[in-house]
Image (cartoon, rainbow, N blue to C red):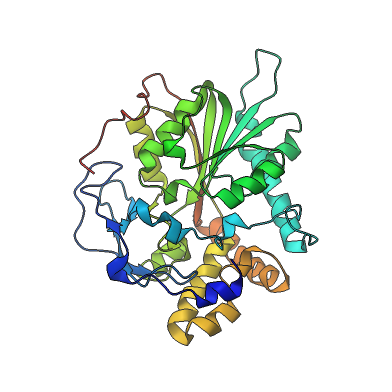
Length: 361
């Protein structure tokens, strides 16, 4: 979809946008606090004009939209112009040369996976390549980064969007197309399962993580990256403008306490859980603030919410500035707006689809 077509699209009226109401916290089963911590709405794409209350579980600290979008609205939320259907980190799925920012992103990804994947890979007892699965692989750029540090590995992806799945296949990855929850994948097959900023998008993050554990080998692991609500910018902007809300696509948001609660409930081993910086969340916060103060068009010019992810001088300046700010905050406070954690299958982990439900949802 072209930018002109995007501009001509109209948001879906609130009364026509289907929503779903949880009955209790889906992580720990605590009753839902009736007082929201914030009111948030779309400001990055053109989806719906509905406002969503954000709530926080008083027990496990999960933050969630209440109500959240119904799964029937996925085509509305992830139209063909959504960035993961088009994001290009190395220039191979377009005729254009990669920009400096795109090349920098690619190097950062490769460095991150060197630190977050390699140390946890089990020694192989048989002669075969490592099997790496990326759930929510987009166009395959993350798997490209993994392959750059593990040249002989077999790379697999799961992707909901047909456009992105096709691009990932063109890069040489084996891709399962559809919702991860609905796909029939081999059990105990993958040495590493990674999922980068996906778990916050799904209707049941508990069952999502459980299935990740089920398709991982018993000596394998699952590495998840997701927004982190235990950060300075969330504390300051949670009432409306925090970029990590990515409204209305982020439905459930975590922090270390929430991750620990979920791991304990699923009977898996939480190996590590650490914060890290994500400067585009700060850019989205700035865009939301600018939209409220100046209107959508000036905000798009100052802090382009989608173009910021594609590279260019403006992206480099904005993201670099916010990266410096957040790295300083991380050094001082030990907190940042994203979180990565590693879990391993445990002996008492339940079979997929049979996790103990904390409450009726």
